[in-house]
Length: 433
Image (cartoon, rainbow, N blue to C red; front, side, top):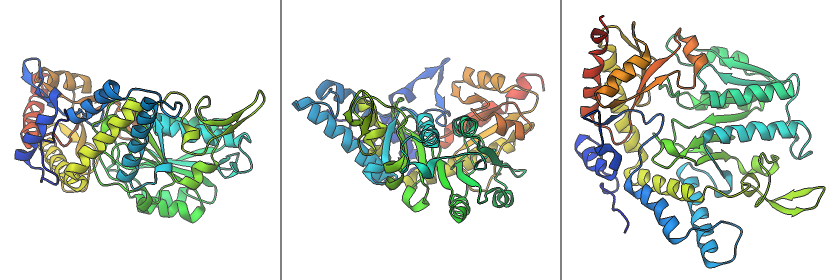
């Protein structure tokens, strides 16, 4: 039996309706250390509604079979569900179905791009793959905000090809220095790769400005959309990015499923990254011919149940409406940053209250290590993220080694934000400050 949505389509999110919506999320009824769970770590991974959990369970109970490799009834049904999921996800981000590649996570999606470029740089797939080839004299431009998943793969590609890695520095508030971006992005720039929303600072980067700079010099644009697709309306065609990556587990879906978006004409000419079964048309002992994209990038047994569950997560978000999601998280984010900055000895990172930002706030508590902050909050049932958030260079630029991060989502209430702020206010006194 399908679990009905707690909210009718298009319901405005506020404290009352969010309380209804929380009925869809079984884990939110959990107690931690004898306290009602306040989950403020959705920037790391989100919780799953019944509908998503049941969609994956239903697949295993009713249609479990390999896709694209059988003619029996279950194989046909599972393949149809798998490809329907691709269609749903494509529509959600303003893409065509053949522009969506399933990956294990966003990290794999970003690695797929760089490894494909490396293969092109070694001559694989030539002459069609030559536009993706890099060599000495070429430059890759990133930003100082990047998650390690959008930094290390490019470091390795630069080492393999002799290309030079450059990065856009930050202003004092952590936003990108666009004057330096104009200087750094030149005719030598082959790739510009950057995060849509910083997972530490919460700032929403000016995609249109950066894409325009890249287009002027003919560079490919890669967007890390992990912190944007789950939280705001995103249309990759309208943004005019060449590639984008996001993951399911940050948007109500299970772990083990990610998405690479790429313009169809680019996927058609890129050499594959993973090779093996299900992505070939002909194999001899000396060579192989590959299927058309996106299938040529999906070797081996696929993430079938996870893709189906991701599609259900998309339907869940669409039922709410991404404008509603963004508006509610904006309110929660402003409440977070305003409250944090009113506490003595606590400093938020990123844009100040009143400025546009996502519903997450990382902060530094003077004199207290982030791990101690997180542990004390956990004693009160509050889940936050501590550490460098896979962004060591960014923390270094901010003069920190680590921070604590509170990140909200559709199922959080203003009451939970206030509970968090009340407990955070006690941290410094607990440690003797």
